[in-house]
Length: 316
Image (cartoon, rainbow, N blue to C red; front, side, top):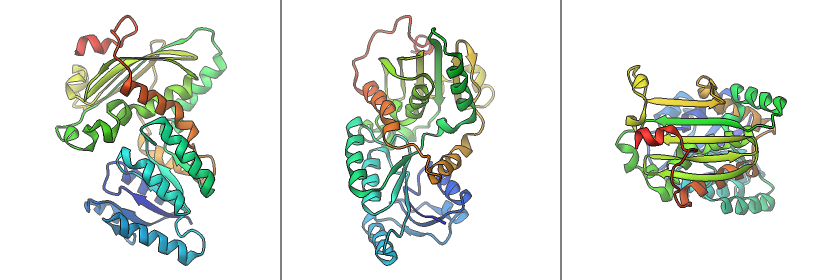
């Protein structure tokens, strides 16, 4: 049984990590969050030590390490706000533990280089949650693309609208310096998926970049992708709203819809299984996606032409 610590226990994604730790037969020994609304811990690990101050959490982890003579904690799961991921991964490695970090692993590509140095210095490893890489539908599509070996590039439309209330822009997620902006915060795992499916990124154009919406065009070795992201309920198609839904997710490849709506709640457990088996995705596997979102955040906007996602015109 492996011993885990968790940073960011009050966050939205933390329960999926607690569930994954539990379902893989391991134990959460300590958790940290400045917010004490963490009653969810009782559903998984009621005996876990909980801290609201990093200094006390740090001292506890260090004490466990010294008492064990090796590393008292095997893994530190990181579910903190995006801009803190880099610091918390460094803490994990220097504490003698491996890290399991939520997306986006970092906000900028050069942060990956610094973490690689600390991996070499400590002999520990950063593992990341690239959950779509373990989704059965995406794995099947990747195999289909590889076997087809077509000389023609696939034409892909990616549309992801996940409604957020007024709280969103008032939280750290609405602060680009902390979240990286909408493409980084809600889109990074889709850009990783596109790279995973279609190979090397060759072009990255940005047509729309707002607090709650972004859109552009990506060209990969094997695909041309029009994409649109939003967390504005008004962008959801009327037919979807009428069904009482607040999320719209669509990926089409050459006009054919790729169905991968199901199974999302189990992907963290699957990711943990792979990590514990020594097959986790590390720092370098994240580089292309992080470079992609960094460009989307900083690149000059271009005029939307024939390559633009249709939602840009009808939703602007």
